[in-house]
Length: 491
Image 1 (spheres, rainbow, N blue to C red):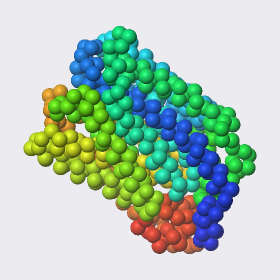
Image 2 (image 1 turned 180 degrees about the vertical axis):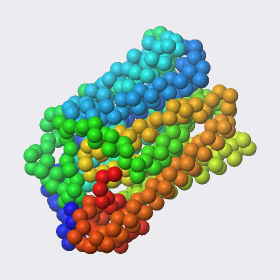
Image 3 (image 1 turned 90 degrees about the vertical axis):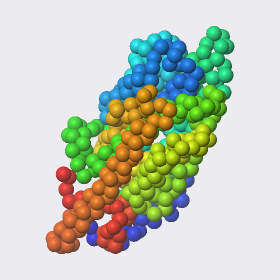
Image 4 (image 1 turned 90 degrees about the horizontal axis):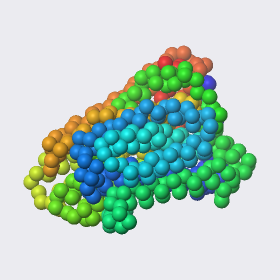
């Protein structure tokens, strides 16, 4: 594609916003597809998170396991997700998100419900492993689906809304548990059994209602005209972007090429390092707060506060990213805030009372994931081919949940302050910031090199421009310190 296209791009850049019919069609997506993907991720997180509250109800003691076994079970769960993440996205492309996503919600809801029958260590480990296998692919599949409906400037907000459900699940899970656990003793069932049963059944109910807007016309119908307007908005926003949908074949060559694209690996390393620190927080925060001297019900209720504050943090950095178009800076800023509170918490924690300790743990939970949706958008905006985008999203999620050692950051011999765990999390957060900066520099240096070659070869040179800010070359030159990729060929 020849680059000298400033006028064309300028016209295209405003088209998506002026297309009234396209905006109406987009609102249909906002009120159907997005809410149901949101709800699916909400129950996804509830089924994963309820273990944390079950531990406050004597779950580990009842089935005769210790903290090391709990950590091992979570390792197996994450291993299952990693193993099937890319294969799941390949299936998504073959049969379509409507059927595949709904089936996944039902399966992990069923497994979550069957946890009420766990009696011993073996049953616990098997159930966690199967739960991970069933969950694999839901997040990248849903994010990929969103990327086919929205323009680049719209995507970050929608991804942030989608992730609100995960972080919202993290917030309301202990709050719901504080009420459900009171059912303990009724009909001969323990509180943690009621927790698994109610939330698991709710997940399966969601899977039944979720397919309606996705599998059939449903309450809000998409006409042929709506689909045409939506696709026209996408093309106007980015003429090089190709559509992807059900039946798209992804050969192994594309998988290999995407994985080998080394210039984007700092994204995955940064995500791996920082996001790995969230796992122990989601598993042990209610238990940590309970150990401060609060009752079981109080601990679960107080554990939800950090999660609710996190929703505001996620929204703020999503807004900042879209407002400034500085994806990388937004990611680095959010990660830096998290690193700061980790350092403060580890330093101050041993010298304060229980309410101050609760405040510190709440702050850590609140800032732990502010960068996450923005980082996902940053990754996606650098892929045009839907096949590559699908695989890259799977890789990003794999990097987020891989690293089996993450479940071992908080260990029984580090109680009650988890000073060693906080030190490990601090080092990892700093590592994540370093690789986010490396990613920025990688893009910047490659842009300069590509533009220099373009000037040397003259305006007749054929270049493919991947930009995070604007499409036009003039804008790219003016904003060379912005975060774009100018690709000469596929490495």
